[in-house]
Image (cartoon, rainbow, N blue to C red):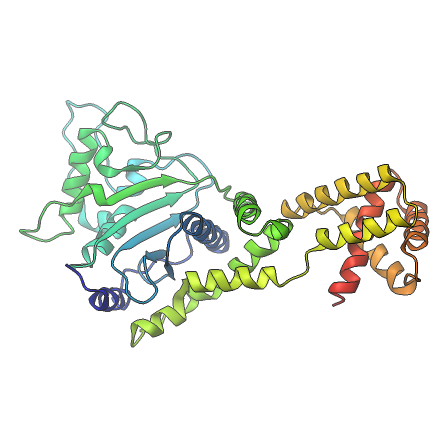
Length: 383
Protein backbone atom coordinates (compact mmCIF):
# COMPACT_ATOMS: atom_id res chain seq x y z
CA UNK A 1 0.00 0.00 0.00
CA UNK A 2 1.31 3.44 -0.93
CA UNK A 3 1.89 5.79 1.98
CA UNK A 4 0.96 9.42 1.61
CA UNK A 5 4.56 10.66 1.76
CA UNK A 6 5.71 8.18 -0.86
CA UNK A 7 2.84 9.25 -3.10
CA UNK A 8 4.07 12.85 -3.09
CA UNK A 9 7.65 11.72 -3.66
CA UNK A 10 6.61 9.56 -6.59
CA UNK A 11 4.66 12.38 -8.23
CA UNK A 12 7.70 14.66 -7.91
CA UNK A 13 9.98 11.98 -9.37
CA UNK A 14 7.74 11.41 -12.40
CA UNK A 15 7.12 15.14 -12.94
CA UNK A 16 10.88 15.69 -13.16
CA UNK A 17 11.34 12.95 -15.75
CA UNK A 18 11.97 14.25 -19.27
CA UNK A 19 9.53 13.38 -22.02
CA UNK A 20 6.34 13.01 -19.98
CA UNK A 21 5.13 16.60 -20.20
CA UNK A 22 2.62 17.84 -22.75
CA UNK A 23 2.14 21.52 -23.47
CA UNK A 24 -0.21 23.63 -25.52
CA UNK A 25 -3.18 21.31 -25.85
CA UNK A 26 -2.68 21.30 -29.63
CA UNK A 27 -3.15 24.19 -32.07
CA UNK A 28 -1.03 26.67 -30.11
CA UNK A 29 -2.74 29.41 -28.13
CA UNK A 30 -6.25 28.10 -28.86
CA UNK A 31 -5.22 24.71 -27.55
CA UNK A 32 -3.87 26.24 -24.35
CA UNK A 33 -7.09 28.22 -23.95
CA UNK A 34 -9.16 25.08 -24.40
CA UNK A 35 -7.03 23.23 -21.84
CA UNK A 36 -7.30 25.99 -19.24
CA UNK A 37 -11.06 26.30 -19.55
CA UNK A 38 -11.40 22.54 -19.24
CA UNK A 39 -9.32 22.63 -16.05
CA UNK A 40 -11.75 25.17 -14.55
CA UNK A 41 -14.63 22.91 -15.56
CA UNK A 42 -12.89 20.05 -13.78
CA UNK A 43 -12.45 22.14 -10.62
CA UNK A 44 -16.15 22.92 -10.59
CA UNK A 45 -16.98 19.23 -11.04
CA UNK A 46 -14.69 18.25 -8.17
CA UNK A 47 -16.09 20.92 -5.87
CA UNK A 48 -19.66 19.96 -6.72
CA UNK A 49 -18.84 16.30 -6.04
CA UNK A 50 -17.87 17.16 -2.46
CA UNK A 51 -14.17 16.34 -2.84
CA UNK A 52 -12.38 17.04 0.42
CA UNK A 53 -9.24 18.11 -1.39
CA UNK A 54 -7.73 18.14 -4.86
CA UNK A 55 -4.70 19.43 -6.70
CA UNK A 56 -4.30 20.08 -10.42
CA UNK A 57 -0.72 20.13 -11.69
CA UNK A 58 -0.23 21.76 -15.08
CA UNK A 59 2.20 20.41 -17.67
CA UNK A 60 3.97 18.27 -15.12
CA UNK A 61 2.85 14.83 -16.29
CA UNK A 62 1.04 15.22 -19.62
CA UNK A 63 -1.30 18.24 -19.83
CA UNK A 64 -2.91 18.05 -16.40
CA UNK A 65 -2.39 15.75 -13.42
CA UNK A 66 -5.16 15.56 -10.84
CA UNK A 67 -4.30 14.41 -7.33
CA UNK A 68 -6.67 13.67 -4.47
CA UNK A 69 -4.60 15.74 -2.05
CA UNK A 70 -2.37 18.80 -2.27
CA UNK A 71 0.02 17.35 0.30
CA UNK A 72 -0.43 13.58 0.64
CA UNK A 73 -1.73 12.16 -2.65
CA UNK A 74 -2.89 8.56 -2.78
CA UNK A 75 -4.27 8.54 -6.34
CA UNK A 76 -3.69 10.37 -9.62
CA UNK A 77 -5.64 10.98 -12.82
CA UNK A 78 -3.42 11.87 -15.78
CA UNK A 79 -5.08 13.92 -18.52
CA UNK A 80 -4.33 14.73 -22.10
CA UNK A 81 -6.66 17.56 -23.10
CA UNK A 82 -6.85 18.20 -26.84
CA UNK A 83 -9.17 20.27 -29.01
CA UNK A 84 -10.12 19.19 -32.52
CA UNK A 85 -11.71 21.53 -35.02
CA UNK A 86 -13.03 18.98 -37.51
CA UNK A 87 -14.04 15.33 -37.59
CA UNK A 88 -13.76 12.68 -34.90
CA UNK A 89 -10.60 11.07 -33.57
CA UNK A 90 -9.63 7.96 -35.51
CA UNK A 91 -7.80 4.91 -34.20
CA UNK A 92 -4.74 6.01 -36.16
CA UNK A 93 -4.92 9.56 -34.70
CA UNK A 94 -4.85 8.18 -31.18
CA UNK A 95 -2.47 5.22 -31.48
CA UNK A 96 -0.26 5.66 -34.53
CA UNK A 97 -1.47 2.28 -35.80
CA UNK A 98 -4.23 1.03 -38.06
CA UNK A 99 -6.73 -1.81 -37.92
CA UNK A 100 -7.49 -3.74 -41.13
CA UNK A 101 -10.85 -2.88 -42.64
CA UNK A 102 -11.54 -6.58 -43.14
CA UNK A 103 -11.19 -9.28 -40.51
CA UNK A 104 -9.58 -11.43 -43.20
CA UNK A 105 -6.77 -8.95 -43.77
CA UNK A 106 -3.52 -9.29 -41.89
CA UNK A 107 -2.95 -6.44 -39.40
CA UNK A 108 -0.03 -4.11 -40.01
CA UNK A 109 2.57 -4.53 -37.25
CA UNK A 110 2.75 -1.42 -35.06
CA UNK A 111 5.89 0.72 -35.28
CA UNK A 112 7.31 1.66 -31.89
CA UNK A 113 8.29 5.24 -32.76
CA UNK A 114 4.80 5.99 -34.05
CA UNK A 115 3.11 4.42 -31.04
CA UNK A 116 5.24 6.23 -28.46
CA UNK A 117 4.60 9.54 -30.23
CA UNK A 118 0.83 9.01 -30.33
CA UNK A 119 -1.55 10.51 -27.74
CA UNK A 120 -2.43 7.16 -26.16
CA UNK A 121 1.16 5.99 -26.36
CA UNK A 122 2.29 9.04 -24.40
CA UNK A 123 -0.51 8.58 -21.89
CA UNK A 124 0.38 4.91 -21.41
CA UNK A 125 4.06 5.74 -20.84
CA UNK A 126 3.04 8.25 -18.18
CA UNK A 127 0.98 5.64 -16.34
CA UNK A 128 3.84 3.16 -16.52
CA UNK A 129 6.15 5.74 -14.92
CA UNK A 130 4.26 5.29 -11.62
CA UNK A 131 5.34 1.95 -10.11
CA UNK A 132 3.42 2.36 -6.84
CA UNK A 133 0.88 5.20 -6.89
CA UNK A 134 -2.49 4.11 -8.35
CA UNK A 135 -3.07 6.07 -11.56
CA UNK A 136 -5.34 6.12 -14.57
CA UNK A 137 -5.30 8.18 -17.74
CA UNK A 138 -7.90 10.15 -19.66
CA UNK A 139 -7.84 11.48 -23.19
CA UNK A 140 -10.18 14.49 -23.14
CA UNK A 141 -11.48 16.24 -26.24
CA UNK A 142 -14.37 18.23 -27.62
CA UNK A 143 -14.50 15.78 -30.54
CA UNK A 144 -15.86 12.26 -30.43
CA UNK A 145 -14.05 9.02 -31.21
CA UNK A 146 -14.66 6.95 -34.32
CA UNK A 147 -13.97 3.67 -32.55
CA UNK A 148 -16.25 0.61 -32.45
CA UNK A 149 -17.15 -0.85 -29.08
CA UNK A 150 -17.37 -4.53 -28.21
CA UNK A 151 -21.07 -4.06 -27.46
CA UNK A 152 -21.69 -2.90 -31.01
CA UNK A 153 -21.98 0.81 -30.32
CA UNK A 154 -19.48 3.53 -31.09
CA UNK A 155 -17.23 5.49 -28.77
CA UNK A 156 -18.33 8.70 -30.47
CA UNK A 157 -21.69 8.50 -28.73
CA UNK A 158 -21.05 6.19 -25.76
CA UNK A 159 -18.94 8.30 -23.44
CA UNK A 160 -16.87 7.94 -21.41
CA UNK A 161 -15.37 4.52 -22.04
CA UNK A 162 -12.16 2.61 -21.39
CA UNK A 163 -9.96 1.23 -24.13
CA UNK A 164 -10.86 -2.24 -22.87
CA UNK A 165 -14.42 -1.52 -24.08
CA UNK A 166 -13.35 -1.33 -27.73
CA UNK A 167 -14.07 -4.03 -30.30
CA UNK A 168 -11.83 -7.12 -29.94
CA UNK A 169 -9.81 -6.40 -33.08
CA UNK A 170 -8.99 -2.90 -31.85
CA UNK A 171 -8.16 -4.16 -28.36
CA UNK A 172 -5.76 -6.73 -29.81
CA UNK A 173 -4.02 -4.18 -32.05
CA UNK A 174 -3.78 -1.64 -29.24
CA UNK A 175 -2.46 -4.22 -26.79
CA UNK A 176 0.28 -5.21 -29.23
CA UNK A 177 1.14 -1.57 -29.88
CA UNK A 178 1.39 -0.55 -26.23
CA UNK A 179 3.27 -3.75 -25.39
CA UNK A 180 6.10 -2.43 -27.56
CA UNK A 181 6.54 0.39 -25.05
CA UNK A 182 6.60 -1.83 -21.98
CA UNK A 183 9.80 -3.74 -22.58
CA UNK A 184 10.53 -7.45 -22.75
CA UNK A 185 8.81 -9.53 -20.09
CA UNK A 186 6.49 -6.74 -18.96
CA UNK A 187 2.87 -7.39 -18.09
CA UNK A 188 0.34 -6.69 -20.86
CA UNK A 189 -1.01 -3.13 -20.71
CA UNK A 190 -4.12 -2.68 -18.61
CA UNK A 191 -6.51 -1.01 -21.02
CA UNK A 192 -9.03 -0.43 -18.24
CA UNK A 193 -6.73 2.33 -16.96
CA UNK A 194 -6.89 4.28 -20.22
CA UNK A 195 -10.14 6.15 -20.85
CA UNK A 196 -11.69 8.37 -23.49
CA UNK A 197 -14.03 11.22 -22.66
CA UNK A 198 -15.79 13.78 -24.82
CA UNK A 199 -16.58 17.13 -23.19
CA UNK A 200 -19.13 19.75 -24.33
CA UNK A 201 -16.62 22.56 -24.88
CA UNK A 202 -16.66 24.32 -28.22
CA UNK A 203 -13.09 24.54 -29.57
CA UNK A 204 -13.48 28.22 -30.45
CA UNK A 205 -15.50 29.36 -27.40
CA UNK A 206 -14.70 26.92 -24.57
CA UNK A 207 -15.69 29.52 -21.99
CA UNK A 208 -19.43 29.42 -22.77
CA UNK A 209 -20.21 26.00 -21.28
CA UNK A 210 -17.87 26.50 -18.33
CA UNK A 211 -19.56 29.79 -17.42
CA UNK A 212 -22.96 28.11 -17.45
CA UNK A 213 -21.61 25.39 -15.12
CA UNK A 214 -20.15 28.10 -12.88
CA UNK A 215 -23.54 29.81 -12.86
CA UNK A 216 -25.27 26.62 -11.68
CA UNK A 217 -22.55 26.12 -9.07
CA UNK A 218 -22.91 29.64 -7.68
CA UNK A 219 -26.70 29.44 -7.63
CA UNK A 220 -26.31 26.59 -5.16
CA UNK A 221 -23.22 27.69 -3.26
CA UNK A 222 -23.46 31.48 -3.29
CA UNK A 223 -26.79 32.58 -4.82
CA UNK A 224 -26.23 36.30 -4.24
CA UNK A 225 -23.17 36.11 -6.49
CA UNK A 226 -24.56 33.94 -9.29
CA UNK A 227 -24.56 36.96 -11.58
CA UNK A 228 -20.78 37.06 -11.30
CA UNK A 229 -20.28 33.56 -12.72
CA UNK A 230 -18.41 34.85 -15.77
CA UNK A 231 -15.94 36.91 -13.78
CA UNK A 232 -15.45 34.03 -11.33
CA UNK A 233 -14.65 31.53 -14.10
CA UNK A 234 -12.42 34.04 -15.87
CA UNK A 235 -10.52 34.75 -12.66
CA UNK A 236 -9.81 31.03 -12.26
CA UNK A 237 -8.50 30.81 -15.83
CA UNK A 238 -6.29 33.82 -15.16
CA UNK A 239 -4.86 32.16 -12.07
CA UNK A 240 -4.05 28.84 -13.73
CA UNK A 241 -2.72 30.27 -17.00
CA UNK A 242 0.85 30.93 -15.78
CA UNK A 243 1.20 27.54 -14.11
CA UNK A 244 2.19 25.65 -17.25
CA UNK A 245 5.04 28.01 -18.04
CA UNK A 246 7.41 26.69 -15.37
CA UNK A 247 9.70 24.05 -16.85
CA UNK A 248 12.55 23.91 -14.35
CA UNK A 249 13.15 20.75 -12.34
CA UNK A 250 11.55 21.08 -8.90
CA UNK A 251 13.57 20.16 -5.83
CA UNK A 252 10.58 19.21 -3.69
CA UNK A 253 6.92 18.32 -3.95
CA UNK A 254 6.08 21.59 -2.20
CA UNK A 255 7.97 23.50 -4.88
CA UNK A 256 6.15 21.54 -7.59
CA UNK A 257 2.81 22.49 -6.06
CA UNK A 258 3.83 26.13 -5.74
CA UNK A 259 5.14 26.41 -9.30
CA UNK A 260 2.58 24.35 -11.23
CA UNK A 261 -0.31 23.52 -8.92
CA UNK A 262 -3.80 24.78 -8.21
CA UNK A 263 -5.35 23.24 -5.11
CA UNK A 264 -8.83 23.19 -3.64
CA UNK A 265 -7.63 25.78 -1.11
CA UNK A 266 -6.91 28.11 -4.04
CA UNK A 267 -10.40 27.48 -5.41
CA UNK A 268 -11.97 28.22 -2.03
CA UNK A 269 -9.89 31.41 -1.76
CA UNK A 270 -11.11 32.51 -5.19
CA UNK A 271 -14.69 31.86 -4.12
CA UNK A 272 -14.11 33.87 -0.96
CA UNK A 273 -12.74 36.77 -3.00
CA UNK A 274 -15.85 36.63 -5.19
CA UNK A 275 -18.13 36.76 -2.18
CA UNK A 276 -16.29 39.87 -1.00
CA UNK A 277 -17.00 41.71 -4.25
CA UNK A 278 -20.10 43.89 -4.70
CA UNK A 279 -23.39 42.19 -5.53
CA UNK A 280 -24.94 44.61 -8.00
CA UNK A 281 -28.38 42.99 -8.10
CA UNK A 282 -28.67 43.19 -4.31
CA UNK A 283 -27.84 46.89 -4.44
CA UNK A 284 -30.35 47.31 -7.25
CA UNK A 285 -33.09 45.91 -5.03
CA UNK A 286 -32.31 48.59 -2.44
CA UNK A 287 -32.37 51.29 -5.10
CA UNK A 288 -35.67 50.08 -6.58
CA UNK A 289 -37.30 50.13 -3.15
CA UNK A 290 -36.17 53.73 -2.74
CA UNK A 291 -37.36 54.65 -6.24
CA UNK A 292 -40.79 53.18 -5.56
CA UNK A 293 -40.93 55.09 -2.29
CA UNK A 294 -40.28 58.24 -4.32
CA UNK A 295 -43.09 57.42 -6.73
CA UNK A 296 -41.70 55.17 -9.46
CA UNK A 297 -44.42 53.10 -11.09
CA UNK A 298 -44.50 49.51 -9.84
CA UNK A 299 -44.68 48.11 -13.37
CA UNK A 300 -41.62 50.08 -14.45
CA UNK A 301 -39.70 48.92 -11.38
CA UNK A 302 -40.62 45.33 -12.21
CA UNK A 303 -39.46 45.83 -15.79
CA UNK A 304 -36.13 47.26 -14.60
CA UNK A 305 -35.64 44.30 -12.28
CA UNK A 306 -36.37 41.86 -15.11
CA UNK A 307 -34.08 43.65 -17.54
CA UNK A 308 -31.25 43.76 -15.01
CA UNK A 309 -31.43 39.99 -14.58
CA UNK A 310 -31.26 39.61 -18.35
CA UNK A 311 -28.26 41.92 -18.52
CA UNK A 312 -26.40 39.61 -16.19
CA UNK A 313 -27.14 36.71 -18.54
CA UNK A 314 -25.85 38.88 -21.38
CA UNK A 315 -22.66 39.42 -19.43
CA UNK A 316 -22.35 35.70 -18.70
CA UNK A 317 -22.50 34.86 -22.37
CA UNK A 318 -20.10 37.66 -23.29
CA UNK A 319 -22.56 39.05 -25.83
CA UNK A 320 -21.86 42.77 -25.33
CA UNK A 321 -22.11 44.55 -28.67
CA UNK A 322 -20.49 47.84 -29.74
CA UNK A 323 -23.84 49.59 -29.25
CA UNK A 324 -24.19 48.27 -25.70
CA UNK A 325 -20.62 49.28 -24.97
CA UNK A 326 -21.48 52.79 -26.20
CA UNK A 327 -24.48 52.89 -23.84
CA UNK A 328 -22.27 51.85 -20.92
CA UNK A 329 -19.69 54.51 -21.75
CA UNK A 330 -22.39 57.17 -22.17
CA UNK A 331 -23.89 56.25 -18.79
CA UNK A 332 -20.49 56.38 -17.09
CA UNK A 333 -19.71 59.82 -18.48
CA UNK A 334 -23.18 61.23 -17.76
CA UNK A 335 -23.16 59.92 -14.19
CA UNK A 336 -19.70 61.40 -13.65
CA UNK A 337 -20.82 64.86 -14.73
CA UNK A 338 -24.37 64.72 -13.31
CA UNK A 339 -24.23 63.13 -9.85
CA UNK A 340 -27.52 62.43 -8.05
CA UNK A 341 -28.99 64.75 -5.48
CA UNK A 342 -30.87 63.74 -2.32
CA UNK A 343 -33.56 62.00 -4.41
CA UNK A 344 -32.98 59.08 -6.78
CA UNK A 345 -36.04 59.41 -9.01
CA UNK A 346 -35.12 62.77 -10.62
CA UNK A 347 -31.63 61.41 -11.24
CA UNK A 348 -33.08 58.39 -13.08
CA UNK A 349 -35.64 60.39 -15.03
CA UNK A 350 -33.05 62.90 -16.24
CA UNK A 351 -30.61 60.13 -17.08
CA UNK A 352 -33.27 58.27 -19.07
CA UNK A 353 -34.13 61.41 -21.04
CA UNK A 354 -30.46 61.87 -21.93
CA UNK A 355 -30.13 58.24 -23.02
CA UNK A 356 -33.25 58.39 -25.21
CA UNK A 357 -31.89 61.33 -27.18
CA UNK A 358 -28.90 59.26 -28.24
CA UNK A 359 -30.08 55.63 -28.23
CA UNK A 360 -33.36 54.75 -29.93
CA UNK A 361 -35.05 51.40 -30.25
CA UNK A 362 -34.64 50.47 -26.58
CA UNK A 363 -37.39 50.10 -24.00
CA UNK A 364 -37.32 52.48 -21.05
CA UNK A 365 -36.93 49.57 -18.63
CA UNK A 366 -33.80 48.31 -20.40
CA UNK A 367 -32.16 51.73 -20.58
CA UNK A 368 -32.95 52.39 -16.92
CA UNK A 369 -31.63 48.96 -15.92
CA UNK A 370 -28.35 49.64 -17.71
CA UNK A 371 -28.23 53.12 -16.22
CA UNK A 372 -28.90 51.78 -12.72
CA UNK A 373 -26.19 49.13 -12.90
CA UNK A 374 -23.63 51.64 -14.16
CA UNK A 375 -24.63 54.08 -11.41
CA UNK A 376 -24.26 51.37 -8.77
CA UNK A 377 -20.87 50.46 -10.21
CA UNK A 378 -19.77 54.09 -9.91
CA UNK A 379 -20.59 53.91 -6.20
CA UNK A 380 -19.16 50.54 -5.21
CA UNK A 381 -16.40 50.09 -7.79
CA UNK A 382 -15.40 53.52 -9.09
CA UNK A 383 -12.15 52.34 -10.72
